[in-house]
Structure formats: C-alpha cells, structure tokens
Length: 397
Image (cartoon, rainbow, N blue to C red; front, side, top):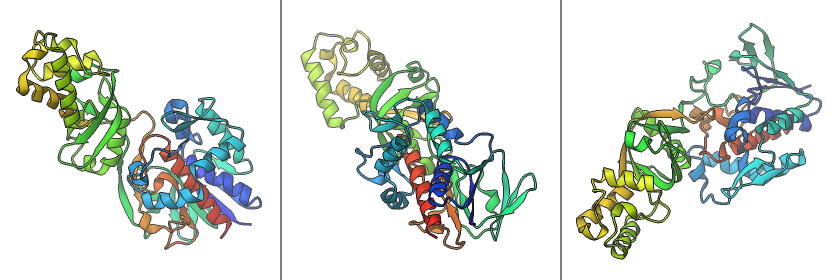
C-alpha cells in the first residue's frame, strides 16, 4: 500500500489529497497541518466570500497576472483550467457566480461552503491538525515537533508562503528564492490624501524610475492607498520594493488616460466654462472632494475662473491630474490574505509533474513554490491546478 504524506492543509494540499483519494482509493493518505484548522486562508479569502478563480477572459498574457511562475502556470492550467475548476465545484454541489470583473465566487457568497466541500471531498484522508514538522530526512522520514516520526513513499509539500523560509528542508540540495511579501497596500503619510478615506477612483499608478505600473480601482484608506491597482502594482514590484525598504515615489494618474487626452479634456472644459469657478466644474466621473484636493495641491485659488487659467495654469492642472506624486513610507498587509513571492525555486522541479528533479517522490505545490499572482482569484486557481497536477503525477507513478 502506498503511503502519501501531504504537508500543509491549505488549498493546494487539500485539493491534492481529495484527488489522490479518488484516484488511489487503496492508498494511505495523511495530511498534516501545523495550525489548528485546515483551509484557514481559504475561509477568509475574498473578504470571506472566497474568490476561488477567475474566468481569465481579460488576461492578455499570463505574466500580467502571474509575475512569477508564468511558464509553470502555462503547463498546469492546461492540465486543470479555470473551466475545470468551475466544473469540479459545481459537480460537488457548489453553484458558482461570475462577476462583471470576471472573478468567480460561490453563489452563496460564503467561503465556508468551499471549505466544507473540500473537507467532504477528502473523506477517507487522515487529517492531522497542530502537527508541525521540524525536519524531513532523506528516505522521506518525517519528524514532528512533538517527537513523532514516520516514513512515507511520496511526500507533497504544500505549506504555502513561507516568510521565514523552510527550515524543515535545511540540508537538502534545493535552490531557494528568498521570500518577500507580494500582495500588500501602501502606507502614505499625506494628511490631505488620507482625509479622502473611502474614496474610490479609476486610476493608473507607477513607481518613479521603474517600469512598474498598474491600473484599475484605487481606494484611499486611513493609512494610505489600497484597491486592485495598488495590489497589482505591489505584486509586480514585490522584489524591487523589498530592496528599497518599501520607500519609493508613487505617481498617480487620476484620469487613467494619456496626458494628451487629459490636456484636451481640461482645455475643452476651460473653453466651455470661462466665467465659472474652476472649483465648481470638474471632469466627468471625478469626485468633487478629490478635485478640490488636487486644486489645492496645485496651488489654485478657490475664486479662480476657468477663463483666467492660461497655458501655464493648464499645464499645472494637467500635471496634477496625471502625475500626482506621493512618497511611500511602508507596506500594510492586505487583510488576512497575506501572499509571498519566493520559496522553492522552479529550477528544482519538473514543470509538468511538480516532482523534484533531484529527489524522486518529493513534490511541491502551491505558494511554497516561487509562484504568486495578483488579486482576483488567480492565486487560488494556481493552488487548484498545482494540487491536481501533483495528485495526477503521483497516481500515475
């Protein structure tokens, strides 16, 4: 009887175990979780609603949503696609909902439905909680913190992002990529900006002196900036921001449009409203609170009329709208949905099977690998796809 040990009861580990159970009903399958609950991260993702995948309909290139791991994701998504994810969960009795933004949620809007569904699919799998490993020895002998030891024929490591690395693999000939946070919001100590807490704008953002940019909804918070645009930027620029100590210059284009287009828009407003106050007429879609803040920052008087602006004033206003600069003074975790980049380098594994090249029978899946994604269901899709591929590989070995 084959004995498979899955270390980590997150999305990848539990999905892998569920498929192993169905493909290998006679195998002994044990899942070990260091924490007190299985699927703890799944239970809180998507604000407790569980954004379990994405349609990928608006994804032009996988590198846009997977800053690290694009080549691997091309392989595993062919094996288990977003459509397969949709089909699998609905076959398990979970109706799904596709939002306008292409994010997929359970119709119930309850992440616990996903948790319960996965645990039910693992029926027959031995789940061990509060089981922390301190070492994996060659020959696949696993040693728990409480002193218990056992051996397995196959080991799948799915411990998720590891900010402190993987000490249980110390001494193994594996290339590791230093882990750093990759999905977080920005701390900005600007009182004028933070006074607009709760305001959402469609904007584009970039980091000065780099090619890192992103666009989409931008949320102003009581600590700085959040929203999909910021989370996407933090994901792509994760390593750069870690290197500069999370202090950088951020530029915001509040119109999310080329400068020439914004210039024409502002010039048209000025021509149509020469006798009106600049503060009383703002571009379509821009909230008045944000407009007033930008006018103050650019040094415009409240009583100034559009007809008094002139070319120099026009240039100053266009700059305020398209190149509004702020200094980042740190990062702020994105709720409980903490994601890291780094971990086990993809050079260690066979991209088609997720088996370790130097240690046959050892597999890695999920965020423990140097693979991570932007927000929007892409990280969980990676977990489902990799968990599936690892299970299929073991079942066919």
